[in-house]
Each structure stands twice: as C-alpha cells, then as structure tokens.
View 1 (cartoon, one colour):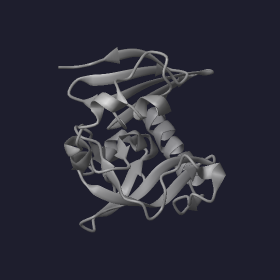
View 2 (cartoon, helix red, strand yellow):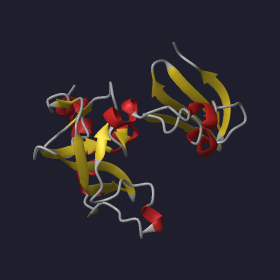
View 3 (cartoon, one colour):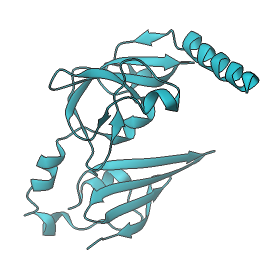
Length: 187
C-alpha cells in the first residue's frame, strides 16, 4: 500500500513539474495552435454534456470528483495549460463570473454556437439543401439540411479517424477518414 501511495505521489509530482508551461488561449493568427479553443470567443456546453470545473488543474480522478459539475452555460477560454506541448487543461470563465479548469478532453463538448439557437433555427430551405448522403465529406454534410452538429466525437487510431456527429433527436452521422459511411436518421 505504501509503495502504491509513493507511485501516485511521484506521478502527480511528475505531472505538476511537466505542466509548468502555460499559455493564453490561442489566437487564429497562430496556425500551430489552430486546434485550440480561441480567446475572446464564446463557447457553449453541448446539451446533455457535463464537465467538472476545478479551481486548479486536477490530474487525479479523486480530486476531480470533488469539483462542481457544470451541465450548461456560455463561457470563454482564458488559458491553455500544456503538458509536453499538448493541451492538458483549459481555464474557462463562465458568463456569471465563475472560473476554473477543465480537462482538454472536455473540448469535445464545446460548441461554437448557442445550442438553443441551433435547435430553433428554421429549416424552411431544407428541401433546397437536401439530406446528407453517403460518401459526402463532413464539410459537405454541414451544408445540408442537418447543418452543423451539436457535438463531434472523434476517435483516432493509427492513421484512421472515425467521427460521430451528434445532431440531437437520435440523429447521427458517422464518418471514417472524413467520408460519410452511415446515417442514423432518428425519430
């Protein structure tokens, strides 16, 4: 038991020592950081998603479960915490003034547009735009009646990328290497 505690303490120390590199959220002018959330841009938490907002980066699950759970809200990213030059945490500020750190993995739940506005968006020109079709790219699918997804779940294995685009109402598009391979139309 003592050895196990020493290993946990050593791994936390190693994480803390390596995570000293901090930077502000990326600006669009920095192409190397293009995949980071952008500074001074509002984001929303995807519907039915939740994240833990911690007062400091919390690599240990036991620390994170003590942090309050956030299930909705509008926020900005104010800082990126890097670990080996890769984002590990984002510091976010919620619209009400609450601030803290979330895991970089939680970025999958960040939406660039208000989900309430997306849900109410008129679909009057749906017949003109058409439905998504197998073989389309993700960009082409966004130009259809389904528009932008609420969330994108991405899995990368070796040189193979699989994506699940979530639209709500049981609607999903499945892409493999940016080619639409399956459609779940929902209700």
